[in-house]
Length: 318
Image (cartoon, rainbow, N blue to C red; front, top):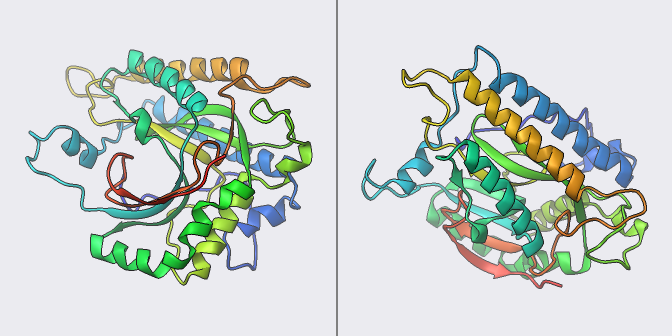
């Protein structure tokens, strides 16, 4: 993915006079978790329809290969190549039951696209806040020192502010696949049966808002690429075109339709197996209370694909 790649908010208008870009959606939703979940779902469904139309169109130009990842994975392309893009982030690490669901999703994707790059289980992450994404190592180190006073409180924040996400679904575009969730809105919890509906008043979007505010308070300028209503983990990327092209090097439209059909089937399975049913608990793997097991992971370095970089501090889990 190009460093300049931006994400379009397809959920609707979120005007605000706040300096915090996450306030607009909360204000537009009257600080109501049901409305916030609906806005995340609107973005997800609109984007899904948009990408489905694009990838199955006769005019589709082909998948977008991540050339940097391709060179990292196959050192014969450019021996000794290293990713020059250094980042500074706060990641949320998925608990084992969510990782198990992702492993099954990845298995089903590999069946239709064998050359798809799969995010390793230990590298899986959801970016709760991206501070910056494409600087040099010395520039990142300067930001780390500038934010040092707030790192402990930020990484531990999920211990006392427990945002929950539910309703997993597989999202995609011409570059990658991601498992996305929605902020919870009072659905019964299996992870924490004592959880009350009002506990979901503090949503994942509120968490993102607070992380932005806490980080900004250290004096660091947050320069993330997107604030769109999305809670997702990348699970796979295209690094070759052989799964999606004919022998002549043209887009294989039948294969693209097959890939999209497999995604639809995966989403039917996810909805049937892991979405909440009225009055019943959610099947294990269908919900995630952020901070479960591990607090936020403050990381720096060449970590675009999850495995690089280093942890500055890992927050307290519950």
